Image 1: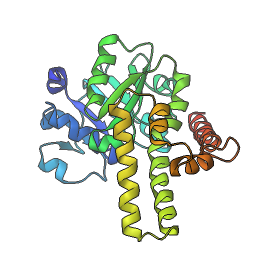
Image 2: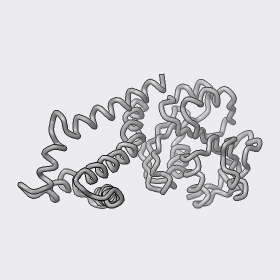
Image 3: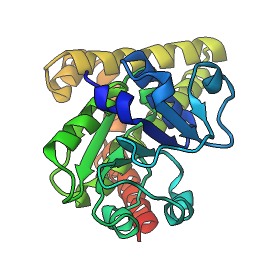
Image 4: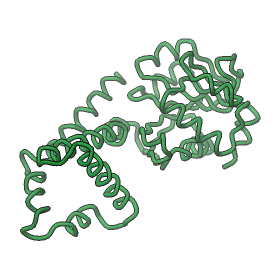
Length: 267
């Protein structure tokens, strides 16, 4: 990855919580020099400064990239005080806030909106991006490079897809964590010790996910390969795949509710 322009002109990161910190860790490990980064976040860990980051200092006037990693509820306040040079790429990872809101506050500036997810903290995330009309192909490629340090990156063809992405992959890790909770509780109900049930649930979800990622076989075929006619898996799936009360209608309601909330945040 060539981050020479960032090392020359600088990168400003506003907000350095879990997601901002994960990205920053990846950038430093992939060639962005600490002294090229300015972090603006009163709550940021002091050890960033110990690593050479410019912490809560005046940012450069025209950085190569300005990254907004604050909660969507804070974005209006941030945008009211924000300025960016004409050559600065603005990259936002805030849920729900639309490109028009950024372009209205920063007219003529290239904006790229991104939706990563929390597995980015271990380099296993997936991020969807969409750019404003002012964003060039080179800037889109730069955003891909910046975000690829925390996982896979996909481009959207329409900003309207972002609410569904937010509901599916942005919020999705929480659904999976809750599934681990539910599997653990079910194991306990069948007589397993809590610690053992949790260990089995975690390993099962992690292993199945890794297999799905590393095998080109369709998930339906992977499921069928585990399912013997009349066996234990078939008995369990009969409950889980019920058309009215099983997982498919529940997931449809779950993702639809999250997508509606994403739309509300961007209204």
